[in-house]
Length: 628
Image (cartoon, rainbow, N blue to C red; front, side, top):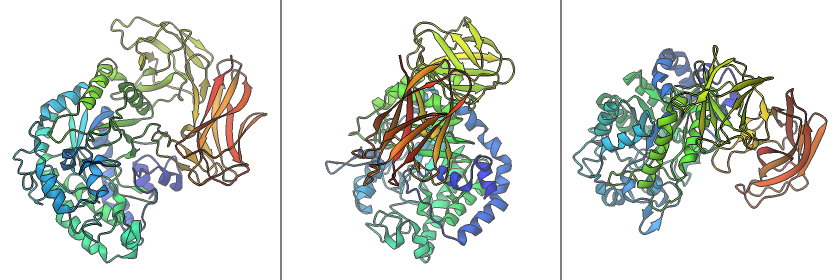
C-alpha cells in the first residue's frame, strides 16, 4: 500500500487514514467498498508487479501535464440533446444524469435521445481555437458517459453515434486532429464502472435488476460482497465492452490521457483489472485518480478533487481540480448560474499555488456549438491568460503560506505574486520570503519598469501603484538570487484584504476528522467535537494590533449543539463562542468571538476547539479583522 501512496505523493506526509480521507470520491459516497480477500490480492499484484513497474515512467508521463496546469473538460453526448429537460420537466442535478434521474428506459433513450444526436454544427477546430485562446493546454472529452452511448463509431459495440444516430462523422477523430494541430494534448473520459445501457453493467436498476443503482439492490455499495455471484455477470460487460472499447480508443486515437469516474460501482479488483489492461495497451497514457482506488491505495497517476470545488485543501503530490462553468457538467439550458470570469481566474491562481491543475468543464449543446455563456467565460479567462499565462504554465507550488492579498506561484528562481486584494496604502508585504530579490515588476508591464522593494525583517515590502492594474488578479514578478525560498506561517495584515484562516489550511491534531468536498458552503472540517481534537494555524502580525475574531460554522441536519462552544486560544488569550443550531448545513453562521491583541514579530499558534457538546458541527474558518 505504501508504494501506491508514494505514487501520488501521500505516504511521505500522511497516515493511511488521512490518505483515505483525501482520496477523491467526487459525488460518490465517502465510504469505499471492500471486497477482501480479492482486493488484497489485487493490491499485492499491482504494488509488487505491474503498477510498481509503471511508476518508473510516471514522471515522464506527467511531464506535459505538470507543465500545462490548465485544461478543458468537455461533457458532451446524447444527453446534450435534451439540455437538462425531460418531457417539459427540468432535470434536478447534473444534466448528463438525466437518464438515471428520470429512469428513462433504454429503448426510449435510444430512440428519442441518442438517435437524435446529430451535431451537424460541431466544429472541432473552432472548439480548440477557443480553448487555446483561453490558455488551456489539454482537452478531455466524454467518449462514453454513464448512459453507455459512445460518441465515436465503435466497432466493439453498436451503441454508438454511427449505428444509432447514423451520424457519419467521427467527433473524436476531429477533436484529436484539431487539438494536435494546435499543440494541445488530448484525452478521453470513459465511464468504466457505470453503464446504464448494458444489461450486464452496474447502475441500471429500472430496466434491469442490476446492482450499484439508486435502489441499492443486492446490498448497495458492497453488492459484490453480499452477492459475489453477480460479479460474473458484470464481467461480461467489462470483458465485452469496457476493456475492448478502451483498447479501441487507445489503438485508434492514441490519447495522451484517460479520465475515469465512479469506480466504487465495481469491486477494487475489477477496477484494477481495467487499469492493468490500459497500462498493457499503452504504458505512456496518463490515468487520473478515479480509475481504481481502495483503502490507502490509488492506482492513478494523480488525484482529483471532488466535483465543483471552490476551496482547496493543500494536497501533496500531483492533483487536479474539476470546476464547471455553471452547476452542471453536461449542457443544461435551464441552469443560468454561470460563474463570472474573475471566479475562475482566481481559482486557477490559487490551484496553481497549491501545485494543482484546473480542468475547467464546459457543456456544449447537442448541435455541436459551445453555449455562448461558456464561450464568454473562455474568452474572458483568455484575456487574463494572454498577459499572465507564464505565472500559471509550468509553475510549482509556492513555498510561502497564503497571503492576505492573495497567493503566489513559482517557476525556477521566479516568484509570481497573484494580488487579488490590492493594498490600500500602496505597500504590499510579502510574508516569509527568504530569498534575495534582484528584480521586481508588473507582469503586465512589457517594459518591466522596476518596483521598489525593501526587506522588512522576515518579509519583503513591495511599493505598488495606488490602484490595481487588474482588479481581478494583478501579477507581480519577483526574480530571486537562487531558488525561491520561504518560511511558512500566516502573516496577518490590515491593508491587504481579509485574514481568513480556513479549516482546510489548519494543522489537525487528534483523530477522526472528516473534510467537506470544497464546494460552495462545503469547505468544512468535522470532528472538532471529539475530545482532544483541535485545529491550529501558525500566525504572526506585521504590527502590534488588536483583531476582532469571527468563527464561521454550520450544523449538520438534526444536530443541535446547544450548550457547546468554540474556544479560540492564542497564548494566554481565550475567546469563546456559544454554538447554535443553524437552519441547515449550508447556512453558514458568522459568530463574533471578541478581540485579542497580537504582538508583532514572532510566530504564534491560534488554536480552535469545540467543547461542551458531542453534537457534530461543520467548522469553516476563523476571520481576523483589524480593529481600527
